Length: 128
Image (cartoon, rainbow, N blue to C red):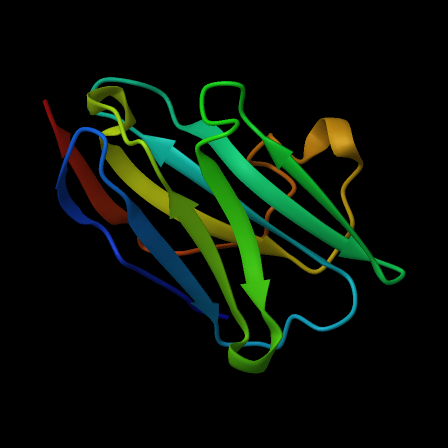
């Protein structure tokens, strides 16, 4: 299984970017997709996740991005997006998407261990 992450780049503070993650397997039915990021010298941290199970979708965000970032899915393209608005220099990092075909409980979604597959990462740089 491969996850192709794209959409990173260089943007000024206050600007927007949209990251995309396209898995090589379908994401109908039960799955969870997460976005994580890792800045130089820092540990990988949770950004956002969506979990779909039994026809219901749950969204979860890190406090640092709530109100600015939105995770969504385009069923027709089998692609999950991370829309990032009002970007700040502290958002600079390599962003990774991750996928599991399971349904982790809410408290676990923000941890990296439930996810079975990871993308290669896309660099986001926000200049001040």
